[in-house]
Amino acid sequence: MNWIKSLFVPKSVAGPTASEANYFAYHRYGECEQRPPFSSFPALLDELETRLDDEEHTSVSLVHESEWALGFYRGGYVTFENVEEGEPRHMTGVSRPRQLALMEALAKGDFAHLEAQPWGPGY
Image 1: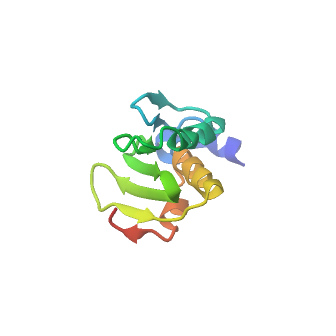
Image 2 (image 1 turned 120 degrees about the vertical axis):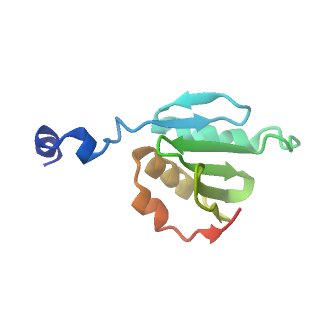
């Protein structure tokens, strides 16, 4: 059915597909990757478990082209915000599998899934 829809609905109306969505991964020490494969997300989270004494570089993030962003910190602390507008939200104690699922949802532009999470207000 999706392939039929893509034949008749202009992409500007249908929205981007997962392979067309543009997102960026920001590594702990500033490197940025455009559209890395989902299979690289575990390694991105692994960066948080090295150099535990470094208190300046404490997060990695994923930013969608729509400016929605997820920030990941040690101990399962995750933030969700639109970097251009709106209030930040957070969750604590998020398991690694759930962090990976959140990353994939953002990369795919599945904002309904992200909005349905039990975010608390602020950072």
